[in-house]
Structure formats: C-alpha cells, structure tokens
Length: 131
Image (cartoon, rainbow, N blue to C red; front, side, top):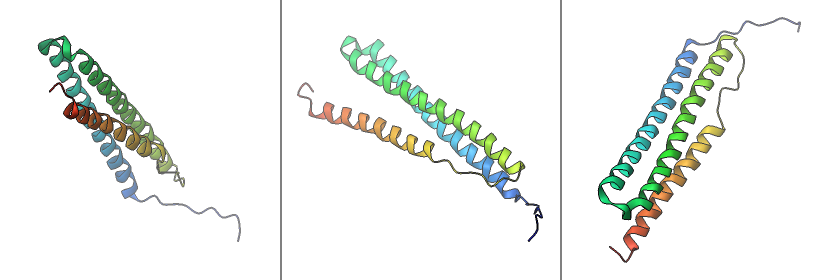
C-alpha cells in the first residue's frame, strides 16, 4: 500500500439533495413566519377592536408571535449557512459532516413549548369561571 491518492467522485444527486434540504428548511421557516405574522395581526386587531380587557392576552399573543418570528429567522439563517457549508464539502469532495444535530432538536423543543403555551391558554380559558 503506497501513498496513492484516490480521486473521489461526488454523486450529482448529493448536490440536489443539499438543495432540496435547503428548500425544505426554508419552507419551514416561511410557514412558522406566516403563523407568527398571523398571530401578531390577530393580537393587534383584538386589542384595537375589543377593548382593554384583552390587553393582557394580546400582549401574550404578541410575545409568542415574536418568539416564533425569531425561530423563523434563525431557521432561515441556519439553512443558508448549512447549505453553503455542505456545498463546500461536496465541491471539495470531503467526507463531511453533512448532518445537523442541534437545529432539529431546538426546533422541536421550541415548537413543543409554543404549542404547549397555546394549549395551556386554551385550557385556562375553558376552565375560567368568567365565561
């Protein structure tokens, strides 16, 4: 066994898989951003048209919408950076790493917390005696 270098061939499907992954993450970011914008719009409408008794709830909804917006921006930024990193690895014919371990976990945790807050708010509203 000598010190021969082997020429690695990168499959063309890998470039398309990288692009497809990027587009899926961008779609997720746009969906979460759209939900955040809708929540913010509903909170503003409720506060303006339903009076001050909804102020506390409107502020809570706006905070949740801002958190979702931050998550959306983070996903969009991360997906662009990760796309470029993977493309560089593919062009250089390096072994990677091509996987992402932290963003899917963080996204799952943030979505569970967000949906849990919405669920707890709905349960609190149902069990509230002033209905």
